[in-house]
Length: 455
Ligand code: TYD
Ligand code: MG
Image (cartoon, rainbow, N blue to C red):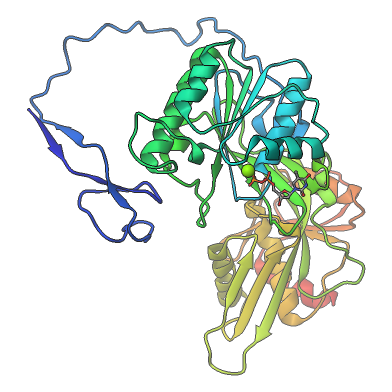
């Protein structure tokens, strides 16, 4: 016996609810719940153990076709993808509006087309004239891209079905696509899901590398349903501060490669320029030593990137609740580090406002940043500059110990290459020979002593 039950889907975050509410319980948006197609609830009596076809099992070591990748035309894009586009796969390219997704994909599409592969670029957001104008600015006016401004998935797939499938298909963006077999306006959960499903099926059946552009909501998830992330093979995120020049392309999920490599670009007048050696990008001009600034050798995949961490401490006179603001790092991690500094080192931040900033619009995810953040905080609190030629790295435990992190040698060698003289890190690390003066620290209290002594 099959029973149907009503269910409602939030059009903003995709969460399910079994009764209608004015406000979504998950994302707190108002009036976003819409009734979804009825879900069937099977009773226990429903028996699936007979009547199906037998499946043939395969051996893991059976010969398989080698993965041939299609170079994207941009070395940094290839690097983030783990070696290039995979035919018959789907990539979701997420990022804030205006960050440069269309620019990146048009540049890649142009480069692929110029090498002789066939490329279809479907823009649902901009008119063909606008895309043509951008291509002109990017120096790609003569690239043999097949360009269309369309939003109907049926029209797109009908047209593509009439000729040989392209090597690369770009859909900009999935939120503007519309399928006439599904109810609802473009951008709703069911439309996004349905359109993506049809496009991905086409790509898989025809060996097409498909890139779907997806906008990102305020809270950082790709707008529309999270289910899109499960449907595609690769989820890429194009990040950066719009007011800064640098953009970082990273894979959040990749069925064909590692997810720790990044691609670095700079947005310039003629489009995105590739930055092959990003290690110095995120250091601000550092001539005079300033209190509250520490340099951290971050690691992105196999590439070291030196970033400056800045802290500012403002003592409050009144009893108002002090603010804690963080740009480029995790605020929970900052709260933890402040608590460790207070309880293990006897420092007092409780009546002070704490601001932390990672220079250059960079976002740190490397846990080894703890020690550099602590150094910046202690230096700001004591108003004593750290040596300009020092770098700091290590993970801090709740007990206030400095724990070893991966690739100490790589971090130190890069810093030495860029003219740094001293490296502070975990006492247990094996720094190898880097040419840097390495000082191992065992506890956070040693760092505090160091900062006070150096001044
Ligand atoms: P765009 O690719 O349209 O962003 P998205 O598709 O992610 O919304 O990029 C828009 C921004 O890039 C725009 O604000 C201007 C800037 N830009 C340049 O600085 N130089 C260029 O050559 C191009 C094409 C864009
Ligand atoms: Mg765009």
